[in-house]
Image (cartoon, rainbow, N blue to C red; front, side, top):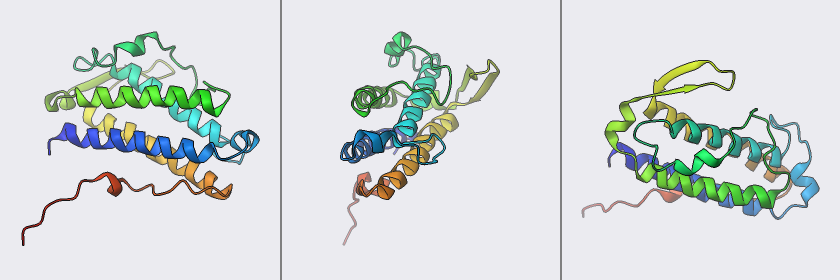
Length: 181
């Protein structure tokens, strides 16, 4: 398995888990989804908005990487979020539509990645304007890890609200291997 295919698996896992989390959250009344539960981003909706904000920021940054521009061209029309706690969408349904769009874009972007591009530095600016250059492969690992981290917070909030989001293990999507007899 090449390195890019590992990211393809993570992109599929990301979409699968986001669909599961949104389906679980949709079982709750709107006021439960928006209620401040003391999580880092307050509520289920606040945390899901944060993930969309962070993904938007990173995808816009990735679109400047020499090997990624074409696959992320549609991000040029998306406004750059100003804050990590910015509310992009005030309701779950609207946010879910945007999340689906992001997840499809992530899958297309990762499918177009070539292994040699992963070793090139990504040059970007922080929200405060500080310039940075980081290994692109490591930044992609951070990108997917960040999503998993905050979805873990959301699944805890869902469990506390009485909704089981189902299995959350990446292993569910790892293909079985043939073992010789």
